[in-house]
Length: 192
Image (cartoon, rainbow, N blue to C red; front, side):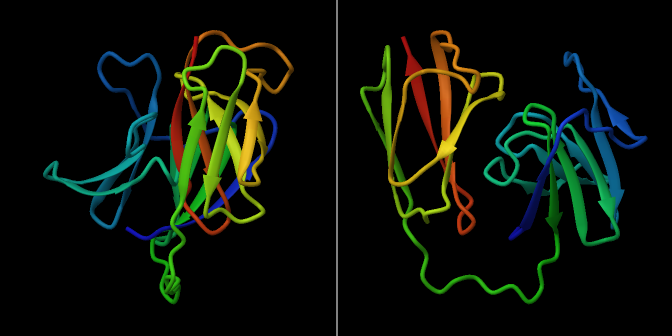
């Protein structure tokens, strides 16, 4: 699927629609929706946080975590747009499921992301190529919560502090760099 995505954010909680799904063994509920003969559901943090199944249970479509890092709530705006919410970042995504008239760029930039001093104890340098000047670096903890964000211009030194200036604990983190032209690239970081 070639989606187009608009992202919205703001303070407060995101409310979800009337249809809820709770997977066995999971402590939270997930929205489900029905469109064009398929059952869509938000399934949290996975490689495809939004999936669509036929009524016979066959997977027919999905939206990658490079488009939406995590999804809990979802609803439809006519047959073209899917709204999804990310409870960890308090962001809403408006996804165009039928982007007719949108042409892919003929030349694709090759994106790369590497780190130095990984695993790290005090700081790590994240370096990337192929991103525009509007690129943003986001760092998420193992639970998918955004702990840090900064502008990204080919290189950034993260000193292990969260957005409030507190040291983050030892553990696994995901650095994610994206810009308005790409779906982004992720990189695992290990803080000792």
